[in-house]
Image (tube, rainbow, N blue to C red; front, side, top):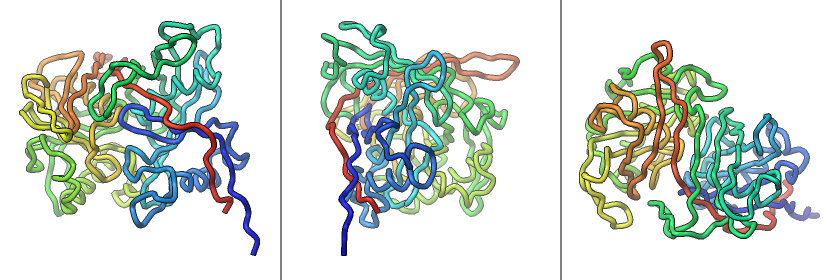
Length: 393
């Protein structure tokens, strides 16, 4: 019996924020995988090592968590006044498909460095020293991200003293601007898709929950932690080892997705695990983070915990951070109430790994709330570069 040799595809393995993924240039993919469709999905799912019934990703590049089971495709810009197109895919650990419905805010921080290092940014705009601003077209949600990438002696600076809770080692700071982060891509709609700052979601057999449903960064359902029996200081084991709790949160997420107009029936939520996100928030309270670092109530505005791909996230997704900051800036939302009410243009929240500060500019236009920009800092670096090998079948 004859066997074909494995495909060899140029790739770079990168960390961006508290996530990591396999980055490809579009033109380096096999021709059949350069366009959306089954061939592309089959290839990239196999790169990650899904579906894996053992939940380990032993035979692929994935890390068997929602934060490390990701793929990115970078291409020359298709939009005027942009440097690159950035397409993000979330690969379920046990699923044989890719969810392309949203963005990864953490990996967004790695796109600018990738684009500069691979010659995709006009050399005349790249300083030898200083800051290079890379304009990124986020192709999943049709939004602009501006990454401010530090340069030293003509190369992307990756090392530095910027510390990010959820990442073990310090690195160079990369500031990200998410422009006009509301009204998510193909799904469209207002920042508050139901027109309400607070809705009541009825989940048969589980209960009724007051929630803020928002499109900013990523479609997100915010619930008051107390209504779920939590205080907002929970770490991963408290949620992820409780199958009943995860099922309850998924049921609420599915009902919220219908209310937001993202799906027309709760049965379709399983095929769209990436979006919307569901998160619960609470007023500040002392707790100890997953690293053992104390977090003091006086140092934060609120507590936030978010579910990603069916599990409590070890830190906070970048796009969900945008949603938190935006919702916190609007008086009357569940998030704003947890933060103590009032108006604000920035928020520092506590998550399982520590704290994060995110800024958001919001305003009312013709009686409707809109977000003009959200800003946060992340870091990124290349972990490995070369070729990834994939069986041809």
